[in-house]
Length: 132
Length: 288
Image (cartoon, rainbow over all chains, first blue to last red; front, side, top):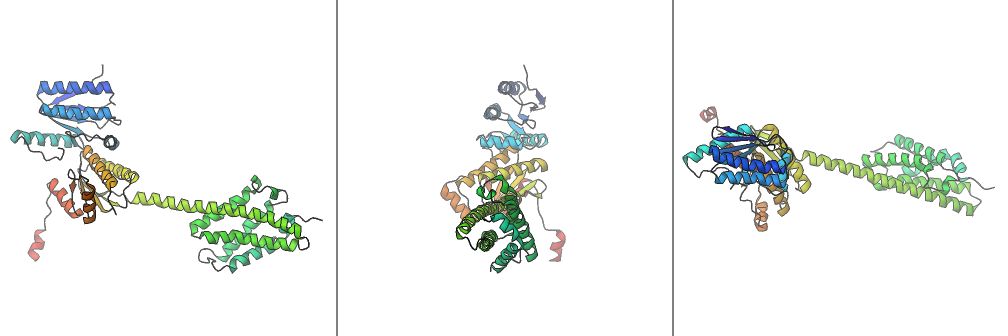
């Protein structure tokens, strides 16, 4: 069965979605990712969806779910490289992905994660992003 | 012997043109600024020639037939070009209906001795000319509508510029009413520019928006949410006192969005987010 590879990079987990997700693949990714967060005690998850051109409400919810699940397992989630069309679709669907951080590209996403984790290590509640 | 309407008129072609021209020139509303007399004469000559070549006793029985297509075509061309040049409907109408007058005058002379035939001929000709008048107006309005459509396109195109005010800061001044179609264009333009320029902050300036109702606010909130999904921050600036009043009265919650009164303060906020500092140069200080 197809699986989306989850790469470990230090404290972070890296997921790049290169193909269009179908529902089964998305649910697998969700469970795999939570397992990996648990196993590696990752502090951050970076999901690159720059190659994702089609998104539906289910995918939007999965992304939101991954964010909330990682959050309660003490890991921050950053979704990077969203296509304009995807962003518009998600907004039209009413999915604002609350609880997920976003960044323009992988580089910015990594910076953001480092910032989040760094601030988290020092003081638990320091959130400059207006997500909550 | 019964006279042929068409033949009689064809013989009088030159006289008809003269009559028509003098009728047109006699009109007080003649627009010499838009078209010179020579041009007008040329145009009229072309039309009258095609018209007289087309009509015949038999064809006049059925004015809807395809035989009149060349006349319709040439008349449409004239009408559309007049619409573009800025002639008024009345002026274009007079152009066609004065031809009718000239034709009837010609007929009157042809059928001087036979009033019943004259009536019949006049009825036929006026029926034809009325249908040509309708064609003229239809194409005239079509021409005007084309102008309007082109202008609408132009407005929507020029009204949504995305300006790069600083490295990583985009500004988008919105001028005019925001409806769903325009929001879509604005949103697409902005998101595309964010990707292309790699900017992290976008400033939406709504000082040019005449009124904000709940729908417009909804569109703004959507745009802000979409930019956030892309990984950029969105600031709304240019909130005028009236806008603030209506927003609060309508009960719209903009508390999740950074809002600033002016573009300048939005830019200041953007600078502080990017940890940039704007300072007066030391030299200037020394000069004072």
